[in-house]
Length: 371
Image 1 (spheres, rainbow, N blue to C red):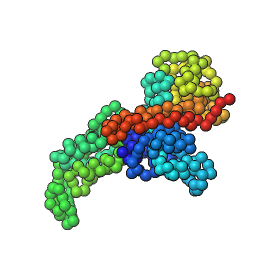
Image 2 (spheres, rainbow, N blue to C red):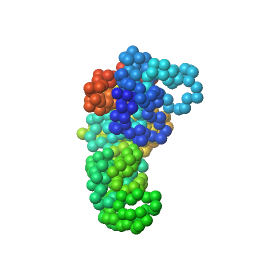
Image 3 (tube, one colour):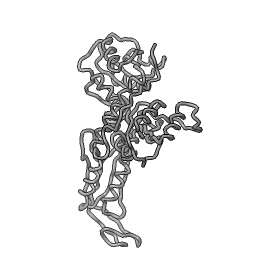
Image 4 (cartoon, rainbow, N blue to C red):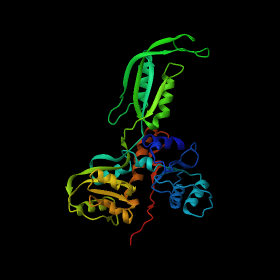
């Protein structure tokens, strides 16, 4: 298998299209056509992780966080980012980052946090906008089933828990080809009318190119009349953070102890107790202060996240408890998730790539220590 084979499998699960605009995801270092010997999965790509990859003969590192986040004007080895880049290139090691594409996935980082806390009735905390497109196309009656089924096969017409969703309208289409035309039906320079069906279906934004390509491959007309628009509907399966419920409400101290034990946190910074039981918990892996108001609107009793600044704790407004468990602690299980995902996806290619060659990094990359 080559690098792009591996990364394509990841992107089938977490399309890069759904990463945040500020992020730097995808193949950061290396050639997509390079043959892969072994894969090392890590939360962060540090020098020690590259050394681990060298030792274990891995030439592809799948990292949650991108080692290159801002533009590099020089690569002289003057800081940890430049040293990683130099060492990876010297040893022909490719580095790929997934970050917020996995953050935004329904079964990504925040789902893992919910699972660790035993939360039920999980929902996206901040559903992502502008991720749902709608296709409107006019198809001659005889070709309708072929076009519709081909679009269904690539994932169009998928809404929440439902597949093969569409709407159709019968009508009459008219067209007149010029001297350069090559009409499938009718004669050039003559007005032709045909029975057509207007097909409408929604699809995930990352499928746009595939939808257009499939449409042109299956539609019989020389010129395909279609329209693609962006819907205002929020995507209930894609977005930042999640919220769920404990099976039973528990006291505040017990809730914090549950969080501490679940994430092996060395200390939790939290806002004032409200003297009420905890039932509904919102989570957001990594820096989540921007979502405090969202957690409040969702009626969460407790919001578990990281990197909360002093004045940001005031935003709790005595409506919920904000708990900062540490950035690393909130995302530490992400690399396990990536390994599980890859091994499941690659099981179909076991004859050409061994599952044992997908290795979980043993390096603890947490830069924060506790005294």
